[in-house]
Image (cartoon, rainbow, N blue to C red):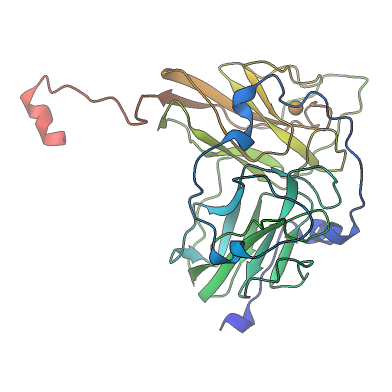
Length: 338
Ligand SMILES: [Cu+2]
């Protein structure tokens, strides 16, 4: 039954506690985040979320304003889906950035997952219990364990004080069917860390098991010239540049270039897009043809962690409609394959 829910945040139980412990910090020192790369700002994304906002968004939220057009939604999970007892839930966020609880930064907040409970009051602090999971360390996904049967899930984004914004960012409240079966394969693994070169800067350590990877697209995909790239992050949290907190950082997308020196700030140019506002997805523009993409996570000063956290390189092909090019039927027998 739903009431016997056991929601276990395997990797994040400790971090979860930080949610309430986090103290306000200023992040005035965030000058070089993504100003030079207009295409990499998620706040310019015009796409509609995969799941539209629920009726609850009509309610008034708390004192912190949300960005116009911002939305929170489940990535790759919709009402009626069947999932295994242990599955990774990805938190989608459009038009705003993630920041750990306590961060004063505008247009940011952190995720909350509501399990088997109604939408909480949207003008008050979200409760902190097994039905209201806080991700105050800036997490953008979680491994959730649910008992077999029907469960409801809903995402609520909230400000540094765990109070939803105005207007509130609330996902659809979806029903999922949990079945006892072998868990889905884990997301693409990141490349093994390489030895860091000596440096005077004390690079921020990355925790064991930290990984960054592409949720979308994946290796070999055909994509449109204006895809929304979704960044996956395991065992660490997102924080805006300038916000120095252990085990956090922000995403960087490397386009058609190799890894930069890992003991220096990541360059800021067309081949190195910074998402220093804490974005977890971004609409970018690519020319038609093949492209090489890689994610590199880095700290408040845009310097990769030690060991560095970067994804596998993926190769994608951009076509006008995002589909494989039409193959001409030069040979009759090819018709069998179409
Ligand atoms: Cu950066």
